Amino acid sequence: MARDPRSVDRYETPDYLSRYRSRRQGPGAEAPADDGTPLYLRRFRERTTESSGTETSVVHDGERFTPALAEASRGKEIAAPIERKASEKIVCEISIIRHGITQGYSTDSGLTPMGAWQAHRRGHELARRWSDGDRVLLVCADTNRARQTADQLFRGAKDGLSMWGIDAEITDKEPIAELRNFGVWTPDGLRDVTSAFRQYQATNETLERLAVGDRPRWLVEIDRFYRTQLGGADPIQEWLTIPMMYFEPPAMCVRRFWRGFHRLMTLEPEQPYDRILAATHSGPMRAFATWAHGYDPGEPLNTEEIRVKMREGGRTAFVSYRNRVTEVNVPPPDEFPNWEA
Image (tube, rainbow, N blue to C red; front, side):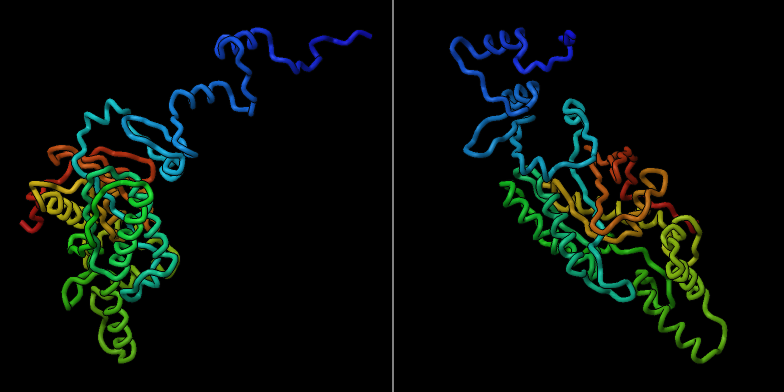
């Protein structure tokens, strides 16, 4: 029985491909060993790579990328085309970063070893975005967990700059009031939510032990907030969506952040900072992202980032968080509604 010729496996190169290879290699050249790399990929590597010892680098848009840098810079963010990137005129990039894993929220605790490692790695990853000559300002909220996060961001960024060979400058951390956590009004004044929790515990214990009188209204409201958390629900969502009489409103946190950013961008008018790293807390960050995107994108993870790109003139900016980018109108620093009028 005759065998169907179409079923015979062909081990030799088709004639048209052999002639093509001969023309490309020139007369008398030996065919290169076939390592299984597709032809289009070999051609791409020939066009875009240059040999430098044992390492190859790719030149794109005037910048050189090594395989190690490409691996570290791999992400999900969608980048604008080069022709549009030039027209956007970004004058300052702000990275709002949540603190690392902390030892607890009932006191002003610092980071765990895992939290310190998270912040160090985040600083290392951020450094690969920077360019030669960049000036980076490092600020943080005035809490132990935010300050320690800023310390590790600094160390990680220094390591990253050294690894990638980038000549950029980063300042030591500076705690600023605008990055504080959202506040709770108490009889002793406005406290951040962690400090208010300590006062809540002490006052509530006294009232329960003495069993006299009704609990004050601020105590009832903060009790509801923490019981939501103890029950496994989301107290920040409650703060974002339900009017709370003794808690700082989310809109005020967003405006406070913007006032701080405006101030930082004009600290040195002659030579403004190119980038700002801001270590802060999840509640105000979530309010900021909700304001920018028009919906609640959820609680930021430890050391997760909200990225703000300020355009020239300071009137608009791009806010990116969890793979969504929104162009926003920036609230002017001198505009603050008088709600009591």
